[in-house]
Length: 310
Ligand code: R2B
Ligand code: URA
Image (tube, rainbow, N blue to C red; front, side):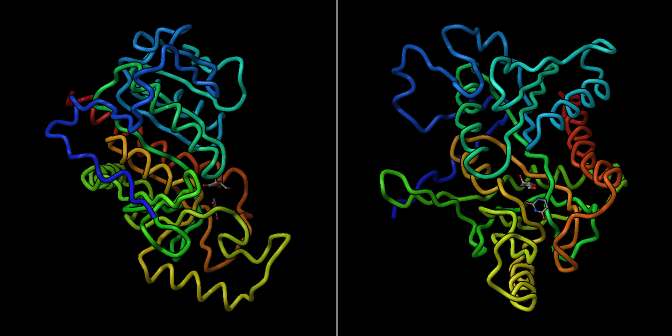
């Protein structure tokens, strides 16, 4: 087994830190086609389009990421009132991307394979655009363990379904394992932002990242289930005892890839239900819609604070 992506050395000054691709082949390529974004280094001036980006927020759904850019744009006064934020990735419906001043908002779909493809192209985009001092934050939804629904969890580290802080991938037939630790000072800053807002409960805890929403998260309501309610409770309680406070499907590869490329990264997810109480997400749509805005408000406040001192 190979171990990869040892922490990039902590930069003295985050603002002057560039994206470090861990791939010697890229520098030798004449053109780089970012296929799933429908962007390329030969047809787009990436430094002109993206060189000023300092904050990248990623989340599952295109409409949520569009709503986020509209929210930060008006909240932070980044554009003219009523200004449109067109999808930059026109010509493909794989991912959607929106920009307002130094903030980029990108959708990633559901699950590790989907976010991993997006992240390869996003990290290369930031590299080609010669961006520096970038902070990347995943804002999303999750199932909580022992938390009031609507609570927000800031991830200390992402863990796998055996509670290990690792992301494992098979590369050329070999297991490659990367660390999923996240940036501790950034986690603390985000927790302080939630304390400033005083709008909803927020905790810092481990986030379990699974390959599936149903059996992978110990649900009893999928099309397949080979265990009992008691087995499920034992597993979720063991996860809680190991430090896990929520479950979602992208944090491990997100943490591993950002860390390997030297980017300051965080994961901020709202919990839609308490998994010790049930499996179905049955709260009214308007309640869920309000819950989903909580990570956006927290991260919007964080960006506002950063820009105020910049
Ligand atoms: C949270 O919600 C999605 C599943 O409903 C998944 O993308 C995730 O991580
Ligand atoms: N997203 C998940 O992955 N799990 C949940 O329980 C809720 C949202």
